[in-house]
Length: 215
Image (cartoon, rainbow, N blue to C red; front, top):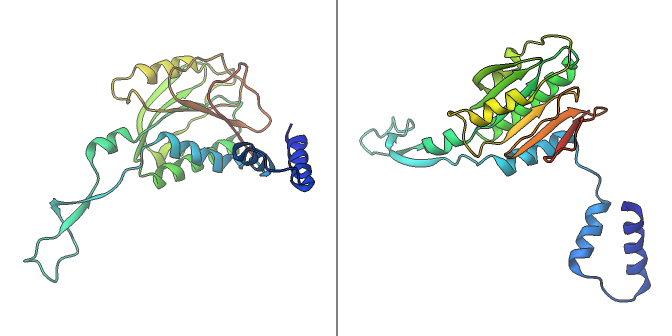
């Protein structure tokens, strides 16, 4: 589909038979572009589903940079507490023995960097192998340090997903990122979600959310 569409677009432009609809032209050009690497695609997913926490100036907190003129009040930078609480996401992490430790570290490092760039301080984390282990909220840069690979069998992810979706301390619109090697059960997720899996892995079901393949 990609090559014939691109070739047809080139032939039409060279034939002098007139213009094609602008929308079709944009779609053909998009097909000509190489696919995004998994980390860039994952960054876009974060941008789409995590609200940006914008700083605002407030006189409720004085600026620290006013020592030269302490008699002149100046507002400091603050972030709305409500937005900060909403700016979080859930991670259901496969910690079975079949997970590749190197790829797992790469994935968690990428997640931490994107979350920090979006001013997301914490993530709600559940570790899964044969059972679900609730780790609660973790600072995004500390998730990798808390991982403990357990067991050697397959992974059961649905209990961890159910735990997040029913948790009172997790936002109703919080997205969920599932990290697994594909050796897992068939899962059902009722909110925005995505899967992060190794490049050669396959999920045992047809996913509804996007799938990012680590390389």
